[in-house]
Length: 421
Image 1: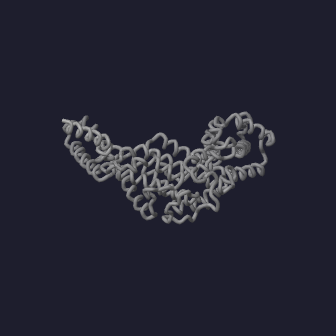
Image 2: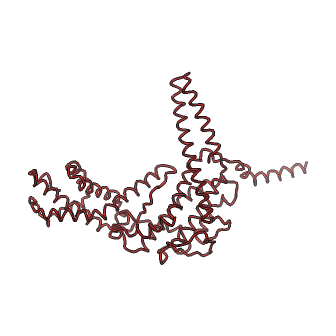
């Protein structure tokens, strides 16, 4: 009897210890294939944003855009630090989602991914050698591309199957719809068996885990961030990092400071929460410049978009321009040239703001949604100086007001009370 009790006690202890492994031993991705495919797509986008071609474009084109230089900063190190912080914060967000899935894995090291990633970010420690060579990462990227494509195909087929089954309920007994449903079910079954759906959590999460380590290693190397514990960095050539490390990227701070570095200072448009609003106003003015006949249609829209501060600034600026009927064709030409010059550097920043904001708003609304364009926050109005942006917008508004009134005067339709801002 005592021997039996001893055996039961040992069995109970072993069961408690091994229960997690038993439960997860044959865990499959299943319905979470779509969420994991979304994370893979995000990881792939980050990796490709760090390609040599993308980084050379960032270094030689993006940070040299006239609008960026005029409104944000002309300091290369500051702009590159913003890009570094944004890429790191995007990776941090993906890692948080990956960590939430790791508990399903059998591999104990994968379950500890969150802590190990933080350690790697702080010190560079990589005890499991998860950082991959460039060749290995490219091979994994192709594999993840296949998983993402198959998940998209599976989602489409499952959606079509559900639609067909709903339609069959309305035409019971119809042979055509029944055959379609049989075919769709076979296709869904095949796609489930050959896609991420039937993969184990260990293999799927391992791809994301190792890719996350590799991407962070790439960020550290190309942006010249020093390491406390050097890892094997022979997998890439750091050919595009800045001459000096960006500010606020000392060892141990890259993960924890990335979000803080993306907080716009008080003097910026982003700090006033007006970046998308001012961007839309600039785009409306641009539309008026390109299509003069549409001005009457968008005039009220433009006026309604002006803040009280902008209206006061425009009124004060109009005092120097004059309120009488405009008849100076030379001055009208000068205003047109000035507006074109301003729009050449302000327009791209406004459009970049709307793309950046729209992509991230959609990403927050939709699980697994991915930013597809390499639009950095430094290309937007979020870090742009408020006074400079408002001064440029005021010049555009005053200029378009003068040119508009001049054209109305030429056509004999000028009425002061109707056509002035």
